[in-house]
View 1 (cartoon, rainbow, N blue to C red):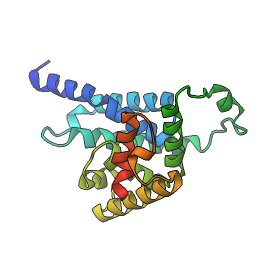
View 2: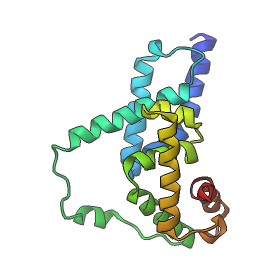
View 3: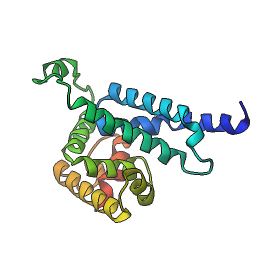
Length: 186
């Protein structure tokens, strides 16, 4: 393995947490998100020759993950899963700390957002992509991404009744997440 492919491998491995966070935000299920990330990395590895050195590896991987997710959604439309939700209810575990409850509320609030707004907010607010990069990943104009992020932030602020990040949670991690996503709307 030459040094260029070794550094590319290291870069792929370094982006796994970002990919996982984006996958969780899309599907809302940690196990399914892990499967999405694994599938993304497999596709990327198998098509590494199509990646152009010097371009944005993170954007390339996020695009692969996003396309994989939507392909899976189209496939799943034909499947019947847990219609009454009883299996999912059996798997849920109530959090033991208030910070977990706050994060659960935040995730539910994210689920209220239309998919395009949630995706834009996660790409810009949580994953740290620029508006331009997020627009490229989503396949839309920069102005569209800015509008989606703004509407998502406004909706989250209303749903959560949050005016400032410190009102949301007791722990610094939760406050940082809220400041980066919801807090940017004010």
